[in-house]
Image 1 (cartoon, helix red, strand yellow):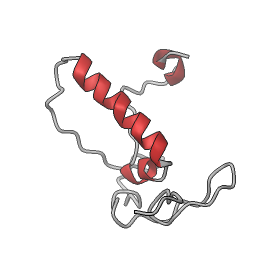
Image 2: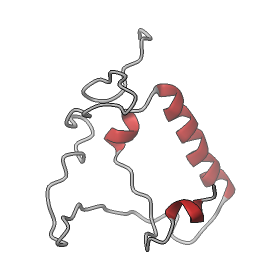
Image 3: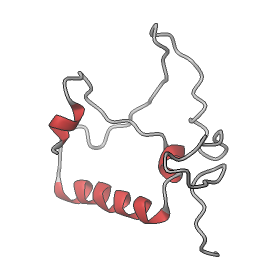
Image 4: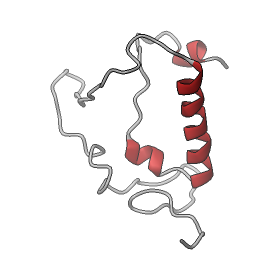
Length: 98
């Protein structure tokens, strides 16, 4: 599936992913993600690539509301993985010892 099809008929111009959610994924997945993002940066030069963006969470009525995922150092626990695998409070904890 290509990106245009994946976005479907939404009016979304951006894909926004909280850092704490990305960090909750296994390290191997994170490495693949970083490689793909790096490939974009190495391949494309586009207007706005040097801009800074700010994300604010809104409720269904358009009002700004607190974002529990904005504090990536102390995010709330990820409830669960869909496959039932355990995860840590601040994200994925591999069996690997550091």
